[in-house]
Length: 103
Image (cartoon, rainbow, N blue to C red; front, side, top):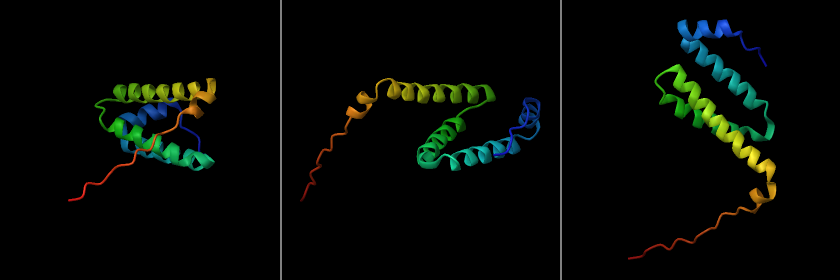
């Protein structure tokens, strides 16, 4: 995995070459997801969800707050599962038969 540039370089890229910074983020995210083994589909879904939410942001601060908020929610859910795995396993979806209307 390639190294992340230092903070000053990232700030410079954000101001002068934002498309290049976005490409760096995307390529590093893909590299990380590809190395994740069996969790790739879940990580791609999280990445897609984050990207959709970030598209609605109007400035870098809002993007940061949106990202931190979403990650805090995900880590909170993971902590709940780790704290009480039996509660997590006991949740089952109920499948409801839908009747088709004929006529």
